[in-house]
Image 1 (cartoon, one colour):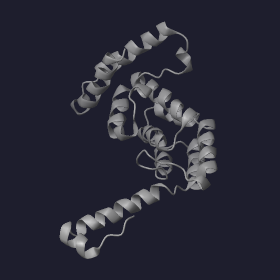
Image 2 (image 1 turned 180 degrees about the horizontal axis):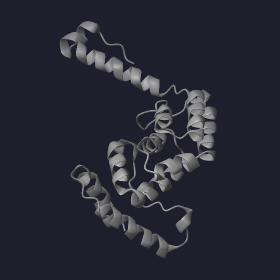
Image 3 (image 1 turned 135 degrees about the vertical axis):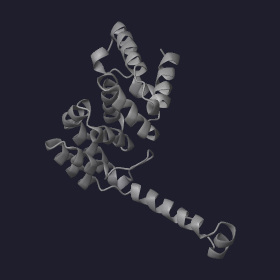
Image 4 (image 1 turned 180 degrees about the vertical axis):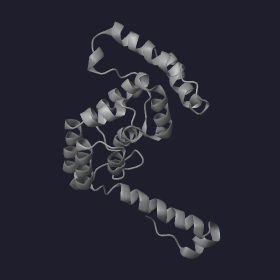
Amino acid sequence: MPKINSALAKNLWGWPFLFGLLLTDSNLSAETNLDWDSMRASYAHYAKEPTDQNAAKVFSFLPKNLGYTAPPQARRNHLETEKFVLKHFSPLEGQVFRGKSNSVKLAYRLYTVADGDLAETLDVMLGKLICRNPRLFLRELRANRNLVTRLDSILMNYGTDFENDEQAQTNEFKHRLKCLRKVRDPELQEIRDECVEFMEMNP
């Protein structure tokens, strides 16, 4: 963090600005020093007892925003944690499909540290939620929109179930679009329209 002359900071911006700058720097630093051992242990506990409370415990260890890059000394821990989550992914998927909101929140929060296979597995699972529970899908997408860089990765990633079957993909595309259009909740209209318009423009 660059040094700032305190008198100049007070005269030009005031102490609230300086305090905010220090707080932001502190938050960024905290998000680059993840407690991987505790995160992995909490996910192991969640996998055995996938309750809303345990899901919340797991995502409390994860960054709140995208952009995390593991420092060299943490890369092995990062990779091992991703592999562990993938190996024990079924409990998370089961809770998401049962409509447990904290588990859906956890799925989105995992994007902050997910690469490759884990990211794609999350994409496919959340895409399947569209017609299982379209309101929950839209509500959590709206709440976690900052964690989704590409809508198509969730809306139109069908996974191996539809691999090499263009007709099946087309049918699933139409099915998801129909499910989204049925949602009429006023508070979800904006995010619903964003998804519908995106799909209509990218058939």
